[in-house]
Length: 283
Image 1: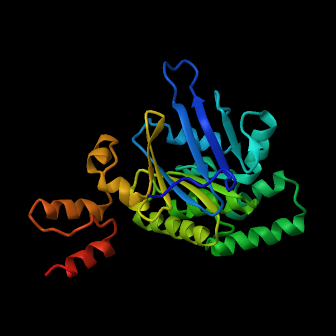
Image 2: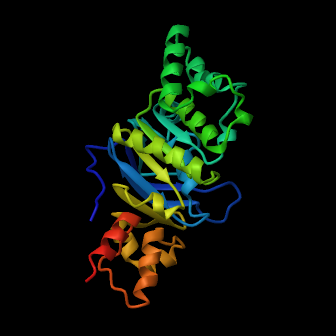
């Protein structure tokens, strides 16, 4: 079973975290523990209202925790105002609606926005923007107005802007939720490339097909951790999956349906490739 990294090898180190919205009767996050190591890809799942987006904002230094035994990210104390400001420099956060993060009149200006706020030299900004436009397949769109972009192009532009500022940790809050299948594939390919380069990623999603390859899965329930471990272990506990309102990857759902028709495929396949292999292996 996948286990959290040791405390000596963490970018994100949270223990006993609480957060309650003003006027709320209960905590949105309650006694939550979470650690993320350099280069680790951690998926965070849970039903609506379980605290996923709240967690994203806290990790990024955008909101102040109500309380915590310990809450640091990239060495910055999230319990202090200065620590949260510093965290915003090292942690990039991408939300599900890219239009909320597109602020300029054209793509290249949007990508340059964060660098300009940090007062990078003009020549370095131009070079970095060119690098990001090339990396995310946006060179031919550099002068395009954001409202004329497709959903996938908008999200890639927002991601390019987030990562134009060098980051140590990337938090993605349901980045494919508002995209069509083509746009979703564009964003997932970009995320896969970032993961291959060793960037630590916290990937928040309700799409279980996006979870199967994670190094570790955190499932939230009413603001606290209900499961932590490998995706395969989570999805094998179908009762827990149903209780958390998660569903299974499409391959797993199909395998269960086949099982009800007495087609035994052995261990539950989580990807279509694994499902095909299981079917091919049947006598």
